[in-house]
Length: 302
Image (cartoon, rainbow, N blue to C red):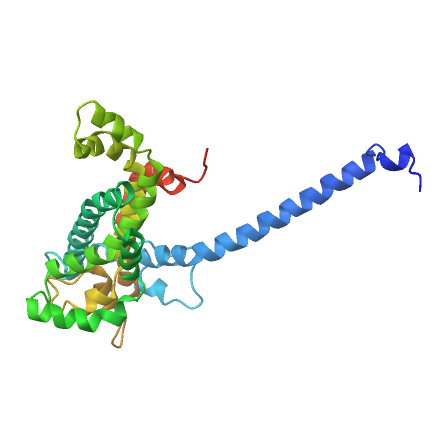
């Protein structure tokens, strides 16, 4: 069957069809923006509610219907987070300090031990290396609540119950497999020829790693440290099972302890949640450039 040139080649686009296409594209863009706005609003509603509750007076918090606007602003709840009713430091402020010490120390230890281990697994030929890496990762398969009782019994024999050192060690143990696996991928992206060239110039292998490879791993280290810090900062199960005194307890169980009894000071709970979220947000903001570079490293291969 013969096909004419007019049938094979489409005719020119008329103004009406072009206008219809533009109209359809505008409608589609409007629908997408509306859907994204609804999703964003639903995601941020809880955050905005906590922020509002933290600066409302007790009367406005329990107002019916709820007051979204026109309420009295107070910072008393934030003061109660850090200052006890009779003066001096509050128990919550001590819990926040414990979280900073425990989370910061465990993240630093996991990074300090995990980066060299990842470099070794990436650069050297080891017997059953894949099996070793799988075994390292398998320690993260089970949730913490499954092994908290054996850990509790072991800690009781070692005298690590109700100590900051005990929390630091268990958080480091859980962050280390994640750090090794994350950093191995980043080390694999750095050509080993850099180290070979440095060793030809007289550097030892460790010196070549420290002077040439390690600076290139800073984005990956920042990204890995953020995830490790989030786990240590938010961890609840070990913190509540392995600690009992207020002097050692971290912020998550301390904030959870505010909810209970006949009355709940929701303003204090909301203010504590806001203060608890700030350190991780600030840390992520400070390393944002390295974080973006780290999570996208290796996404485009040449």
